[in-house]
Amino acid sequence: MHYSRWLCAVLLVGSVPAFAAPDSCERIRADIQQKIMQNGVPESAFSLTIVPNDQADQPGAQVVGHCANDSYKILYTRNDGATPGENTDAQ
View 1 (tube, rainbow, N blue to C red):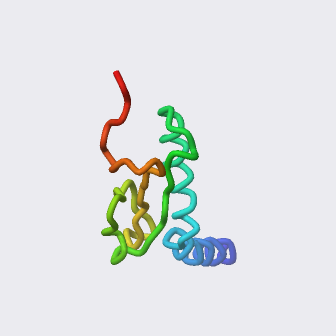
View 2: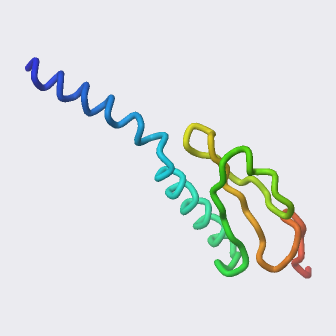
């Protein structure tokens, strides 16, 4: 029983850095991408970029998520040249 507690503790401690790893950013980016596409936006009409916090202020980009303990931001950029948040739909 003592061995199983030790193993469990090692697994928990060993998994903590995995939560903060940039791999988590890729999962979050993919989730955001799916949500945007489910709202009818074609994949070719936008891009999502993962950048360090100090590079998040970019012209024409909008922060749509964060990851890795908030040390990275996920930026949305429209590929059609429109400003993020601008409604270009004809109604």
